Length: 294
Image (cartoon, rainbow, N blue to C red; front, side, top):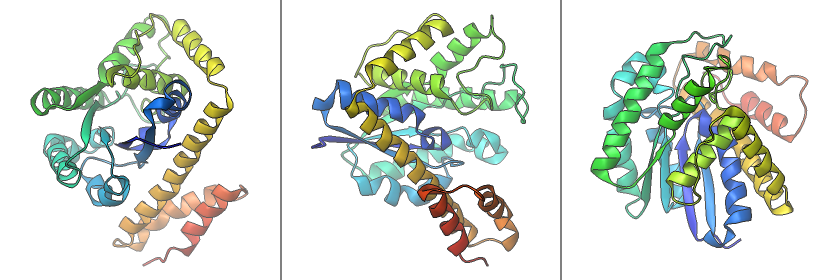
C-alpha cells in the first residue's frame, strides 16, 4: 500500500498490547483504504510520561509521523512522585515532541480509567486514589487541548460512564479488564470506536448496554473477516509482539546501569518461557540470555 499519512501511538502497555490498534488497522485496511493511513505502535509496557522521553527518537521521530497520539498516565498514577508531577512531565513530553516533529498534528488522549469500582478479584486492590489521579490527568489534558489546540480523543469519560451504568446490573463487568487496568477484547473495540469518532473518521454513539455493545462488536468481526482485514490484524498483532521484544530490550538497557539484583524480575521472565517454543519465544529467550549482567 502507498501510505499517505502515518500516525504514531505513544503509550504504555494499553497501547503495547495492541487490542484497540487491531480494530483501527482493520478499519483503515477495509473501510478507508483511500486514506492511506499507516499506524505505528509505540507502546511500551510500564512506561510513564517521564520515562518515555529517552526513547522518543527511536520510537516516534524516526517514523516522521503526520500525527502523534499520546496515551499515558496509568503507570504515573501508581507512583506517588510521578503522579504529583504528571502535569510537569506531560508539558516536558509535549515540548520535546513538538520540537522534533514541528509539522505533526497532536492527538491528546485522556487516559483510560483505573476501574476502582468493579467487583473484581484482582490481585491488586481497588485503589480509589489511582482512579482519582486519572480523573485529574483527564481533566488536565482536556484543558491542555483547549489551550494548545490539536485534537482530543477522550477515552476516560465514556469508559467511566459505560462501566458505571453496566455495573448497576453486573458489578463484575468492566471495560478495563479483570486487573482494573488493561482493556480486553470488548474494551479494545470500545476504545477503537471512540478514537475513530473523536478523530473524525467514523461516527459512533455509545451503546446503551453491554449486550448491544457485544452485538455490535460481533457484527464488526463478521464484516471484517476479509483477507485484507486478516492481513491487517496479523500485521497489528505481529507489531504487538515486536513491541514486547522492544520493551524487554528497553528494560535491559535501563537495568544495565543498575545493580545485579534488579535482574531477578527478568530472570523470572526468562523462566516463564521455559517449555514454550516458537520464533517469538525463542527471540525473547535469546535477548534475555545474551544480554550482559553487571
